[in-house]
Length: 297
Image (cartoon, rainbow, N blue to C red; front, side):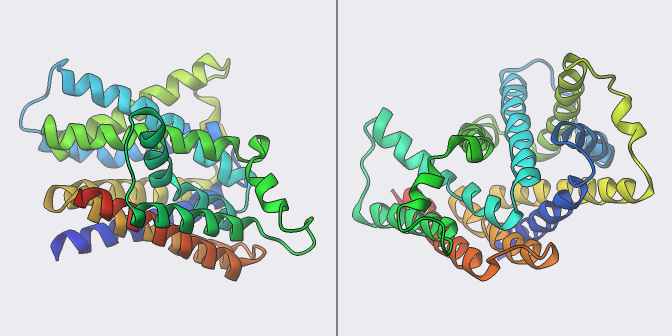
């Protein structure tokens, strides 16, 4: 049961982090926030560098970690952009669709086949997404379908889903095949995050020092809290993945979506929270079926 506790702790702190991020994004733009968060999280990751028995060189594993972190940074920025521009109870359930993206991509590009239970899981996820977009007086039963295919509204979510799909596969490769130690994984991943966002801010024409000038006492507290939450949920997920199949860990970790949808919806007084919680539950049910069934094959 140790893996379950670790995965549940990861889900809990991931949810708390998402709600706290929404609060910070009322003041900062997505790029500034991503950059500042990468720096504060790096500060709390410093102890991991002292736990590394031997500093790695420019190995294949480290190169893959760098590439994976670039994808993760892009996904993080997209999620922050989505959370800033959408209500948290609307944006987060859609992020739980990543297993569906993996399954459908496999069918289209590598001739994967799905068993009836997996098709049923996809149907559940579609139904949950439909309920998420169903609103009173919004143009009838076809309006949710039109909304879902509105790329301008969900461009950040869709991009994040694609990036997370590849990034998750690389996580498994690094931990299982390359056997990258968790301390090394955590320390250098966060170091790469900070460097990547520093370069992005610099290349955007901004002075990397300017975002720090916007930090007042309240924002500093939020950033420090997010830094702690981020280190905790990422490390506990890595440790849980060492002890149990990735599918089981991810199934528990997905509960963070439900926690954040309910908690964030209530805290920020968002609309249609009960409907969105129901939609999130249905989407998560489909996601868990897909993940567990895929692991059993």
